[in-house]
Structure formats: structure tokens, C-alpha cells
Image (cartoon, rainbow, N blue to C red; front, side):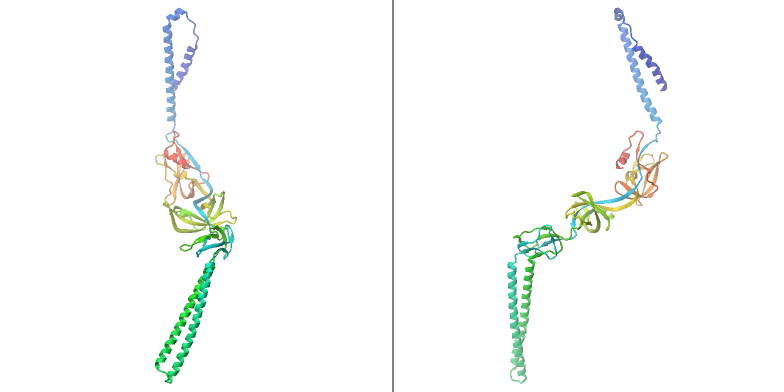
Length: 440
């Protein structure tokens, strides 16, 4: 091929100079006679240009072949990443709702008409404070009625006691006379029966008095319930009643007020996916954000993990309670929060990008794409270059956050280069290496 190039370099300049030399203007008759000879020269020039073009194509093809033969069939280029030492943590994402620690719905046990409402939204209340009152006209009338009934039964009891005393004395006199044989035995039987009836009548009167007293107590209790009081110290979250409104408590107690005990301490009820339950436990730290303050993270801590599963659209979650300090009162009940639960944290961990764990070198020397899951003993292999050749390094892996994985054992040092992708001699790379590049 070198001989051809040298021949072309010598040939082409002379031919070009020959074509560029000026020709003298022939006589008209001679030119007319030799017109056929000029056409022949043009065809010769065209043939030379065709030859030159073919030789140029052959020269380029030969260069490509020689360049390919000069490359080693085993030569490869690799894409690498660095081993890093950094703070590493695994966070579990869960959504939930903020709620007060103790929230109470206050209703009425009685039916009636609301006479007055004493509190409004966001009012602070004390335990026992009156929130609203029902109309008490009917209840007061029932109290008077039961009081009168009690007094009547008490009077009957006194009559029964007097009758008992009379029957008792009469029976005693009959017993004295029968001892002297002054009265017949029949009188003794009559006196004893009268005495027994008097005792029974006294006992019945006592029972009626007790019943009347119970009715009076019940009516007085209902009268007291007409004043709806706060069961806790807290704040009014909701007021669902107005003066003049009719309350019907026949089948279900109507909710009139919603109270929260203390808004400076709240609870985040987060729904954690069943796949993450093995990584969380009570006492773990967490943080969360709310839409009202998207740039601020609020601290929290897991205080309870409930075992009752919640299934929605085939997805099983477990309610996890996180304590929240709301001393600034920025958070409100019902806010939706996105929580990051720190399941694992290491201050200075050796980590590698996940793409390095997915790269593998087959026996044939081609790059392969291995699975991301570790073996049961958490051992895997990463690859590095030594003297220009890929070398496998066994490692033991720990937790992964989806981007990098913690290395808990293995001969890896920060700054070491690991292979994640192989680029073949043609600069393409197979499908497995392209996947590795994307995952890195």
C-alpha cells in the first residue's frame, strides 16, 4: 500500500501540470480537421480522473483495515466510579396525618333545645367549664314531680309504721290475755295476722320511698346534664351547635364540640408499608415536612407501632405513631405530613454506587449485568483495574438507600476506582453496560 501511495504522489502533479499548460490557438482549418483528436484527449483525461478516484477509495479502505488490525482484540475501555467515605443513612418514607394527643368529641346525652352556647372556636376551656346549656323547663318540672312523689311515699311510710305499732301492741295484749285464758285462741291468730300485715306494709312503704328517691335523683342528674361541660383542659377545635338548635339523642349521641387537650404536643399517625416494617422500631428518630412549610423539617420520634393492619387497594400498611413537639404552634390538627424515618445511620461509612455492585466480568471477558440482590451472607463482588486488567474484589454489603450501598467488609479504600461499564473497541458497549451506566 505504501508503494501505491508513492506512485500516486509522483504521477498526479505531472498530469495536473500537463492539463494546466496553456495551448496555442490553432488555425481554424487545422482545428476543424483535428476536432476528432481533441475529443479523444478529453476522454483520456476523464479516464485518468476515474482511476485516481478508485485508487483513493482503495487507499481509505486499506487504512481502516490496517487500523483495525493494529488494535488488540482484548483492548477495552471502562467507565468507573469512586469509593467514598461519607455519612450514610437509610430513610423510610411514609405519609400520615397530624392529630392531637387527646381529642375528645363532646355531645349531649339528652334531647332538647339548645338554650345557650358559652364558647366558640379556638377558645381555651377548663375541665368542668360549661360549654352550652339545654332548655331546662321540662327537666325542672320532672324534678318537682319526683320530689312530690317522694314526699307522698314518705307519708305513706309513716302511716305504715303507725299501723305496725298498733298491730304490735294489740298482738302483745292478746298474748297476755290468752295466758290467763280470757280470750279464745282465734283472737290470737287474728292479732298475729294483723301484725304481720303491718310489717309487710311498712316494708312496701320503704321500697316505694326508695324508688321515689331514685326517680328524684335521676331527674336531678338529667337537670345537671342540661349544662354540657368540658371533660378536659384544652382548646375548642370545632363547635357544631347554635342556640335554638334542637338536639335529638334518641339513638346516637350528637357531637356538639370537638376539644383537643394540648396542641403543644401532637402525634403524627403515619402509614408505613409492610415491606419496611422490619427496619423500624420504637425510639427511632424521624423528621417530616408539611405543605404549609415545605422548606422546614420538623423532628419526631417513633413512640408506638400498632399491629392492626390497614389494607387499601391491596396495599397493607401499619399505623405508626410519632411524637411531635409543637411548642411554636405552627402545626395544626389534620395537616398531611411526609415523614422520613431514619432506619439506619452511620457517621463515616464506606459506600459505593449501586452500579459497581451490578457490574460483572464473565469468563469469556465480556461484561455482564449481575443481579443487585446480595447472597444470604451479604457477600458480593466488585471489580477494579490492576495493571490494565479487571480484578474482582469480594466485599460484604450492608444497607442501601437505593443509590449507594454500605460496604461493611472488603479491601476497599476511599478514592479507589470501581468498574461500572465496559465500552468495546467500536465505542458501543452492549446492552448490559448501557444499563449499568444508567443505574450508576
